[in-house]
Image (cartoon, rainbow, N blue to C red; front, side):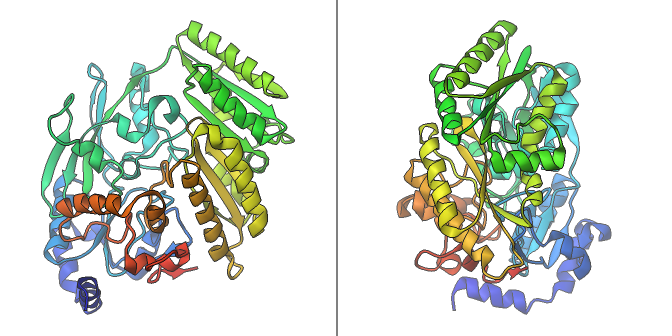
Length: 493
């Protein structure tokens, strides 16, 4: 019997009451959730096609309580999964059978703000846009802004290395993390980073994007930026996706690096207008392009003029410019509501997160349309066009038997297409449980082995978010498999 099988057998036979008591003594009774009906809340993250109820949920409030909970897991050889706000889209926070779920949602304190050095220290449960709200009065903001920024937490952003609509110019989460206080998988507490050019290995960089496999961040030092002097947002609409995609490449080729550059197709445009009713997206457009430029007033004016000329030369039917904060918010509100708005078009959607070179946008979008017709499912395209981060949303009905398996296969074909085009299988949603079996499409066996060595050096017992991120024979088999087969012990609904 393998080590994993022995662990599974031991878990099935485990007496949980003494372990529950250990958690209660280390934290408090109301910080330990164990009733089955209460555990239902934690069965899944944003990847809602699969569910698994954890054995116990604990709600620590401090670094010391996180460390105590992790030490109990280490001592009892209990697999544990860390969860923030539960908005992840790759199954990274999906519990495992007979696991402990350590939820950081109660850790919501802003611990320190240092304007002189442009940094802020927060706990992992702090919501993304709370950071900007905390510093905006002093003329600062936090740049990474996922579409779920009003509900997603900084801890989850750290785990998945989240991006957002402004990552083209300002980078993703890892570019804004200066230091971390970590609870390692054995319960030890360490501090990494938080100094310019620290000597030795980039431990902060290793941890950001590790998806909970290397421990839990309990205090996070973030970089905050001065708010730009001037901002303008342009909306251009097109009769073809190809013309909009070409405009993206031409804008970058002209030496302009927008703060954000987003594209939405007709499916997405109409879904947003149905739900949010902004009355600012032309509903008959095949595609729209949102371009935001910021900086000094003179630079912004020149860049906006050049962008307008480029999109017009590529066949834009019209170009609207929002100069007031209210108008800008309206334009971005639609883009950030796109995922949620898909409920108007379909009972369910399956979203992917591939990345491609900008120059490949027209080709890849045409190929996605071909795959859509081949499999018989509509695909709505919403994406960070400037950095080639695609978010194709495959529309389906999960109540119909067999549809989920088919759309997963379609999603896998899109990921393979991204890799073939010179891109990646993830830009900001992470690998989690959803895409782990596609890792060999992008990395060699030697690459994966090296990454696994890093994980084993820190997560020595393999208890921190096991089975996530990397493919294993148990989860993926020896050959290509659909995503559905990865969740052999997970209840589907």
